[in-house]
Length: 112
Image 1 (tube, rainbow, N blue to C red):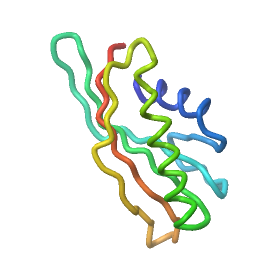
Image 2: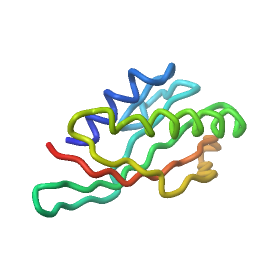
Image 3: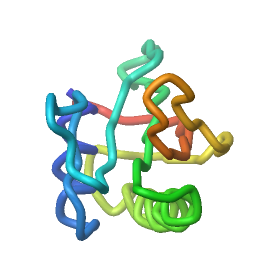
Image 4: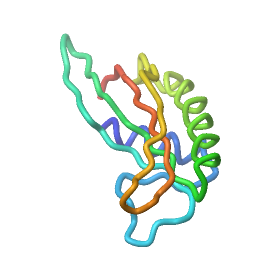
């Protein structure tokens, strides 16, 4: 499962928690992974993953987003990941909860 692969990879690359679900009592700073699409062809799998960088301030969220993008650029060092490209990244603040966050969207080609 690519979500678990990325979760484990980012947990080792970042100095703040990485989760797949927002905890009931979230830490001040964390990254959340969400698979938003996927498919496969000729034995290869494709996934669209969003990584949200949540922080106390928008500036910190933007900085953390840059760190996430730099870390994800190294994902292809894993033997089962062949491509990881950032399609876009943007301010994704949750106006309801006032959670400051940035989101980066990645296209990943991999094999299980």
